[in-house]
Amino acid sequence: DVATDNPIPTPPFWGTRVIKGIGLKEYATWLDEDALFKGQWGLKGDTIESEGRPRLRMWLDRLRTDNLLEAAVVHGYFPCVSKGDDLIILDERGSEATRFTFPRQHRGRRLCLADFFRPEDSGEVDVIGLQVVTVGSKIGEATAELFQGNSYRDYLELHGLSVQLAEALAEYWHARVRSELGIAAADPTSLQAMLRTEYQGCRYSLGYPACPDLEDRAKIAHLLRPERIGVHLSEEFQLHPEQSTDAIVVHHPEASYFNAGRGRS
Image 1 (cartoon, rainbow, N blue to C red):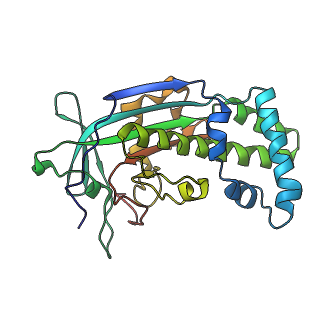
Image 2: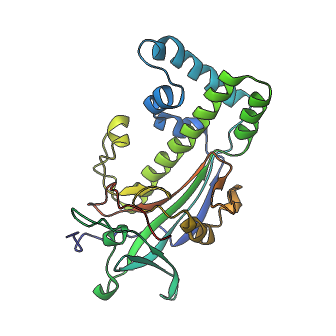
């Protein structure tokens, strides 16, 4: 029951682009402080103000002073169509370049990620965004040194901050993608509303319920070639450096987070 008459955005380019040297001030405003203070650092109540914020300011100053961040992005737009549970990525000739098979809900709306793209038999070609972002390897090396030096509090704080900064960069870049696709006009003005995804479209990271198969990372890596920003895929389909994320960016107005269970074995 997903609409198939929504406008298909025109991307600013087809293929991939690499962006390096992104300044901390550009994406630090996207930092989810609740996730950092409560989730990563385990703070609550008054300790967030008395300990959390001063420690955050200290770490951000250190990151700038020691030049520990190397934020970079590789992203791209690709033509695509859907066929059942499959999303087919097309090459410049309109032939199949690769295909993702996503799980479908067993109840409710029986959603599948492929539903948010034009069916192959519609005669129309849709567009999908893909992105890989990283804050680089230096910050991981710094956290490892803290751990080896038995500075466990500093290690936990810096590691948690590095993870959340990678997520902040991903949110920042997703906002830019929405702008490039011309669907950002209704974006909310507050960060909390942004983090609640009160905007058009959705960003799905590999390993989450709608796209649980980590093996699909190899297909994204083949299309985006993230080694150009220093990101590599392990044999276990994990991104290295750890402070990196990948995502499928969907423009459809009805796209939202949903649980579709596990994919193929």
